[in-house]
Length: 103
Image (cartoon, rainbow, N blue to C red; front, side, top):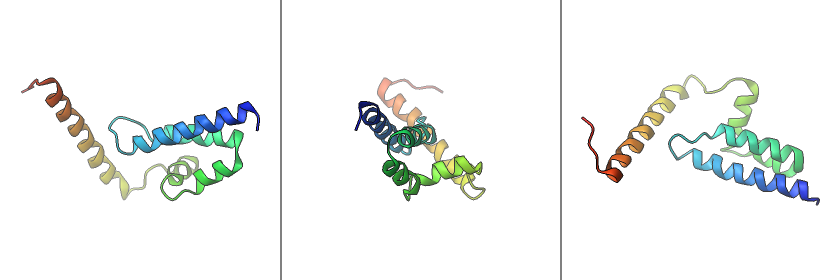
C-alpha cells in the first residue's frame, strides 16, 4: 500500500469518526464529514467505500444526498425538534459553565 492510500484511509476514518460525533453533538455536521469520508475511501479503498455506503446507520446519509432526496417528509418535524433540543441544551450548558443569566 502506498503512502497516499494510507493517508486517504486515515483521513476517511477520521471523517467517519467526526460524522458519528456530529450525530450527537450540537452544531456539528454529519453529512459533510461522511461525504468527505466517502470521497477519501473512493480514492483509496473499495472495501472501506462499500462498507460506508452499505452501513446501516451511515450509508443512508450519503445515499439520500446522492439521490437528492435529503430528509424525508416524515423525518423533518422530528429532526427540527431534535435540533431545537440540541440548541437548547447547548445554550443551557453554556449558561451553567459561565454562570450568566440572560432574561
